[in-house]
Image (cartoon, rainbow, N blue to C red; front, side):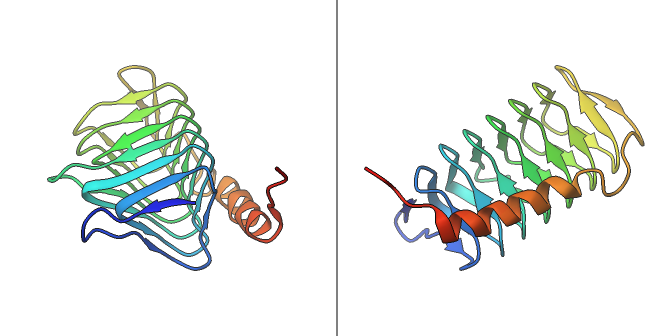
Length: 172
């Protein structure tokens, strides 16, 4: 695994979390219980804190960064989709950040919300609970989701992390 300290900044990874050997975790990064980080994802906590909550997953190729002013906080049971980029924002519990989407500084993604694939959430935008943010720049569709609409994905990835921790082996 590519897990690095940067000076005094060291990742804090729960023993039940899964970090794929091809992922990169640097500096001030916290991974909660059963969180998972998948191939080619990069979590770079060099300027501030990145916190990934319990059972949340950071999928293949996602990039998570922060700023000295804005940490990046991902709640519990969240999905950060393939190739997504989130930086200096807060993603509340049971939210989903879609494939190749971007969420920028000081944005807030409310609980049970969804940022659609390829959407861009500009800095400072608040996506309310149960809403969808779609397009570039994102437009809000309030009350578009049931409270548990995104939960199944985090359950699947928590189970996948347990399986990979137990069964993944390199063959070359």
